[in-house]
Length: 231
Image 1 (tube, rainbow, N blue to C red):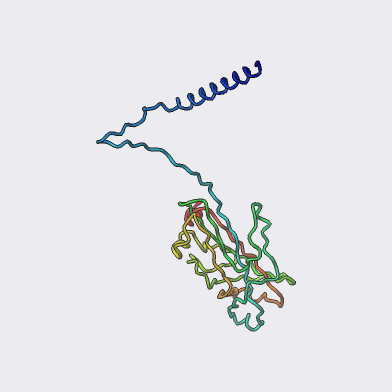
Image 2: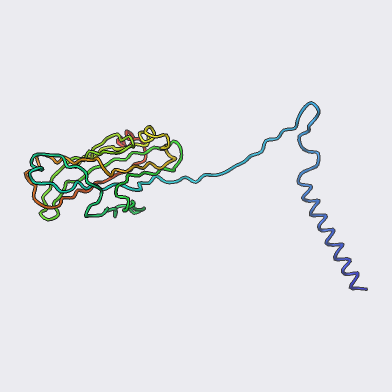
């Protein structure tokens, strides 16, 4: 009998607690306290829906190598331009200067920039080239690479020894294709064919047999070209 009374008391206590919790929850919104709707006037309320966007990064994903093949000493002395053969070279990308990541070493024919920082952001891509140095004799010669085959709307189409040129801007890329939205897209193209190399005439007296390599430095900067130069 005592056990039955205890069970009954516990049940009553639990029911009372539940009713109190419901009452407290219901008391949070007082009945009839809202906006009244009448025959002449509808009731309206405004609430908020929300989401957040995390900004992405501005990145240089890939940059091309250029192989201008093998030519004769006679053609070099004549000053003939060397035509691009492919993008396979004996060396590899040297990206040890980049502590925050590396470019795609397999995509040797691709120039690619990604910008997902959001609308209203701009960028400028420039490039300059060292002298071509003979791997064996260490003799050097300057030159100019004229880029061909790109559909990116390049601002400049030459990469020169010891001279920096603004090759591409986000604005120019956007003008070339509607899919290249500034701050919200990946701009990419292949430079697999059509480029040429013209060596500096004054340096031809230094030419010797062997393989010549030059380092091309690609610099991706945040901002419009004129602002980057001014800064």
